[in-house]
Length: 355
Image (cartoon, rainbow, N blue to C red):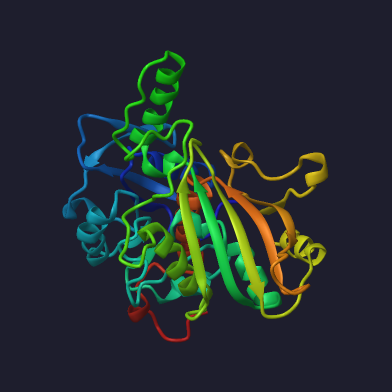
């Protein structure tokens, strides 16, 4: 359903428009009938390329500070370095930035938002709103439901992440290694330290001094910020797997109150955008191929955590498309929240008493 706003049609810039997530963002802007009057696709180089949108071709422009003149909303998916430099430039020119990189997520004063989970935080923006990590994203609708129903005491999550999270080159490398294997040729790796085909790598992003990777740290601190649970214990192990699209996660949650698996199924089934697929006796459970190309979060294998007293813990399996719900869709949904609530101006520039 088209969103209603006194501000449309809007000028929307997409930074990183030629990348995997950037292209998906543009597709979703069209799918959701976002009120785009002018699309401004931006990239590190133009090269005469164009982007199809709304029945016409839009030329790709080089992302510079001047490219944000007259932009209402700028959606970034071009890496932290680009966001660090250009997001403040866009905001200074009056745009609301929705940034998909990790650059601003933990910055004090920058809202970190999952649409439908903490929309109200977006009202406090001062020009930049951060989009969470894809692995964090798909957990949040379920965690919010548990937090509100019985409270959460501790979380352990293991992620099994698709190569598309590393971009076009990683997808091409996996496909190339599969072909090389079939041809009896050596598997050459350049994107990852080892071949990813027929392999798993317990290594996503750089390792920190505490032994966790930066990816694992992101899941921990982002979960706390989004849920407003700054002391919640979270431990994560992030693993890269030879899947092109959709991240999968094995989750264990210790609860403050009590809840059994049947109650959890009913609770999750009532969460918008969540599909319960949970009949393991008949081999019904979420798979990466289920999540690919859609915006739903799939959950299954819902059971009691056997390591905890009855009713005090749950274990479950979560799958979602890392390019769509995990990145592009939520970015567009954040933009919808901003427009729908008339939050295009910075919080400090609006009158008090925001509705």
